[in-house]
Image 1: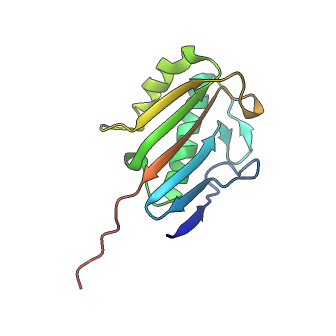
Image 2: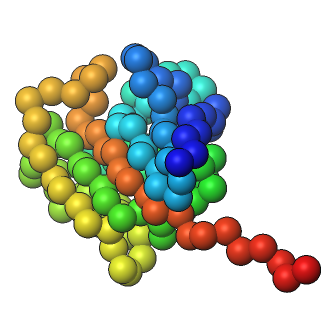
Amino acid sequence: MSKEIIHTDLAPKAIGTYSQAVKVDNTVYLSGQIPLVPATMTIIDGDISAQITQVFDNLQAVAKAAGGDFSDFVKLNVYLTDLAHFPIVNEIMGNYFQEPYPARAAIGVAALPKGAGVEMDGVMCLKPQEYPAS
């Protein structure tokens, strides 16, 4: 078993005792992302749509740093402080994911770090590396 800690400056720094992601063999476990702008480490200005978009952008940066993309996601967890925003998640998610979609859970929570309205985490299964024939 190989284990690798994933880090990129294109996503927010961890604000606690965790890694942005951990890669174990071909599986990548992505930590929760809230709508922090990586350069400022502050919540993005704007409405819930802006927050959801920033979270997907942050997840995308971590996925890329791990050698994957949204097509490699097998599980996505969405945490919302207001489940009435779930249709907005679906709409924006369609800009990032194509069928077949990952398995997903949407969970209503009382609060999230830094007053965020949304947080997401996920699991990716990377495609096996293809090597040129020698």
